[in-house]
Image 1 (tube, rainbow, N blue to C red):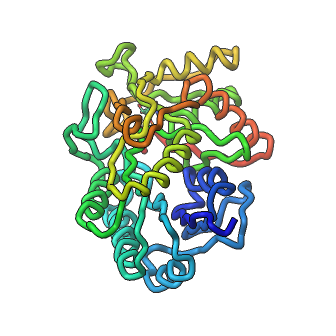
Image 2 (cartoon, rainbow, N blue to C red):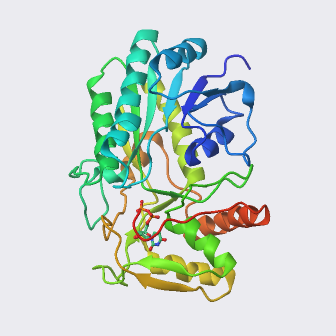
Length: 332
Ligand code: UDP
């Protein structure tokens, strides 16, 4: 029991963080850290939860020296592409916060970190994106994530696994934990929630150069993300660094998401086309062969029907318990 590895998850009150802490709980000794409290629908083991802003280096040092984690899973940061957020805020929450973690890791001899990066570090491409493809983030979000990747690459005495996530979606079914952004901007939670309520879904753009004119994305079930992180923890045995894409490996259009929802819910889906959203790429699809090769991971839960069915369970739970969900307007 006592030999279980100690894993510290930063950003544990966020979407992936909440799912991951629930998923890893029985496998490791899990510690969680966030600058804010867990949302009230997620039950947490309060004993191992620390409230700390990563920019407060002194407090962070106390916590890290107390825990001395074997691995830090660093998920905290500004996570949506939103050009309305001041660039400096992205820099502080994404780059400076990670710089603090790295400096303290060196000081306290903490060796391993898993960093959640993003598909937004790549330059746009029509075909499946490989890790060796051209980098070229256009959003502040993507740029700051890439800066952190470079910071990690420079620090040779710390081992890292960088996971470039594509479109993370859906929920953990057991225990039930899911996505709850305020406001919500993502297609899957918005369309499932609105479809259940019979509300109108806005689809941004219908004349993209894709097979049906709507954008193509690569949706990956959050449970597959948790498994990828679990496998990355085990990868540290090899004492190598690694950067890999984590996605489904298949693209699906916005219109096809709605068609699948219609099939599952057996009802007409109410939607209208709106103007294109600023900064959207027509295609974003992942090549997952490196993840297969290096950590023996491939998606198991990410068929679109499964993603939508689980998200339906989560949305029904939120509706039944009268959680107020806000949605962003056209621009993110
Ligand atoms: N989208 C949409 N309506 C919405 C939210 C998103 O049509 O209410 C589209 C968005 O323009 C993009 C796709 O759905 O083409 C995926 O967007 P999402 O925000 O889920 O993920 P992103 O790929 O931007 O990270």
